[in-house]
Image (cartoon, rainbow, N blue to C red; front, side, top):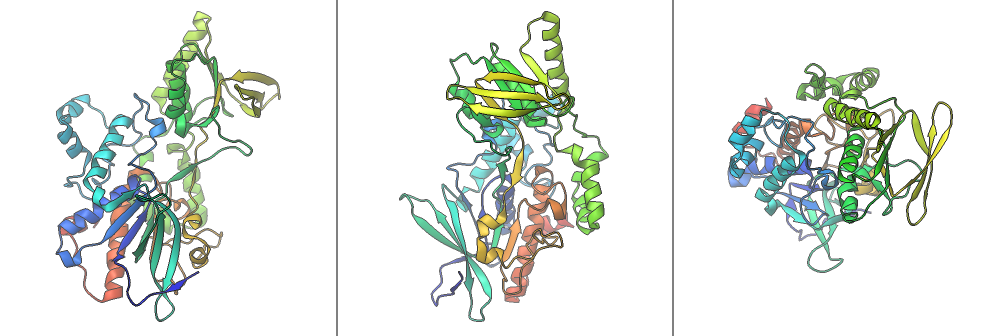
Length: 455
């Protein structure tokens, strides 16, 4: 329920970010760079709220030899501002590894290295972040004319347990990330995992001797999980279960990669709905349920070598699914059924790992009903989003609500991917600055270096 704007108001931020993963980290950097290049009175006031106690990004899948699937040049800043001090190359220089990385002759760093880069960048803007603060409510605040010009963001966290803090904002940037996707009826436990928690759970198994794992899924995370478990537990069988004949290779060829270009967002946004669907059908194999060809070859080599030696540990159970699964308290009983014949195989496993992907977070859960009711929808019933990633809302809601993810239906495949993050946050910031001009009538002063790269 909305509340009137009191006579004495708390400080109002130009934007509050909900969540502090890579996307909102990039937004914090963009605001920092803007503020360092303009007069103080033109600075953007921003703050970000993150429920984790420290910065963390897919920690459960930071397998020691896993590499990124995107070029290091698609870092937090380079496509927006190649001269940025927050680039991956500046990170390498600060760590004393720039020459070593160049000699490595790769575009794809180790995932643990890129996570360290994120942590390095997050530390440089940590004055903009409150960690250990979970957003529990967003309240619309009405002005004298009855319109909503501010939002009160209520976060639980701080020095005292259960303490609530209210942050008032003109704009909200929602970057709450992804949620694990599981088959209907599956409940996570100490023996039934989602791949996002792989390393946390396997750490508990150190010093034990598990006999069998079942891995469900056909994408990159599933293949990485199968390879990792097979390597780390040399006495255990690993049974990979998926509906396909085999893992499908990701299309990372030069022309196909154009689907991740900043210009492709414009194409997708303006395309008719049937064309949008075709583009997703054509190019889904650049990102969804696909695996790097080197990893496919490695797994095939392992399986074939074991067949030659007559000592099987890696089993690829293709054209199949897990028909039943029971957590027995001491293990998991999984019934794997052929999709062709229906023939069933019972596997008594120490754990079942679901590498079945993620859902976009439903932004309505963050906003709550009063605000969600003011958000407009497209003809298909989805949230209507403008080109600047701002939700289209009723005239009574004058605050900006921007989405870092959940815009695949409107903006295409890069909605929540790193590929376009640097450019995306630049576009959002430009929108926030433009709306501030409308609200105040004061011309904006923009950082020339950034505007030049945005075009």
